[in-house]
Image: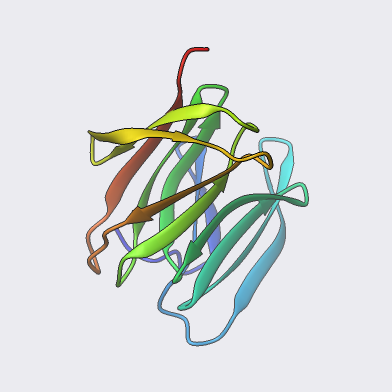
Length: 138
């Protein structure tokens, strides 16, 4: 995998975004996909994605995200960066999710009142890590 030179693009019914190699902030607004408008801001220190003006994804430091797919059951994507990243996702308020990193169940996490889920991912440049977050049954 590699950084997303155009900052955001569609791939196989999903979106990919982010470029952690940029020295200064870059952004793309009003990127249309699936009837929604996306905005991405990215550079070496942070990558942030919004959908229809609402928060979706943020990583510190910046990352490249491949094949992001959101469903009612959760979200999945591959992420890469040049160092470990703290990732925040917007999901359902006060819901419990199973978190998988490279197909390993790393445990259950509960979102806060605002629906934010935070996780850390160990990253090595040029190597992508699969992340899958599934909502658990009520």
